[in-house]
Image (cartoon, rainbow, N blue to C red; front, side, top):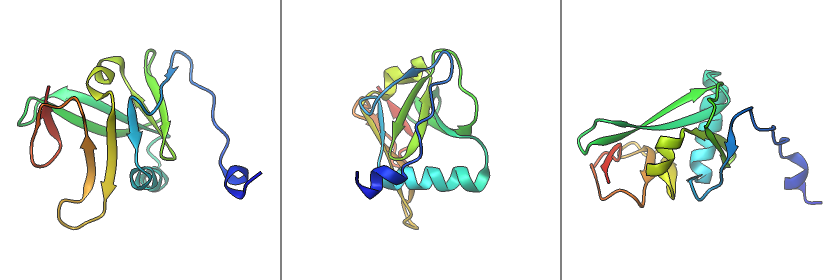
Length: 130
């Protein structure tokens, strides 16, 4: 047994009504996973990162990130990059194959989505169209 395997936290069971997804839906890079874990510890706002896609932004659709301790019936839970992400079924249609990265650069830093479904996106990376 390797040291890494021995110190990983136990995997929680799925909340009722929540399906388990995988990184084919959304993947957090190691940098994004570390930042999500640090923000959850600092803010104590919940155990999950919820990713949602809503109408708006300069290209028609926009990403919304928030921390929550609640899941909803039908949500999809993806464990990736050391974090737990919840996505509603409607958002999952637009998110499939997306990678979430994080950069701490002063210019152009922050969370960045790389979405293969986006036909166009704005320069800030927070809005896209399909």
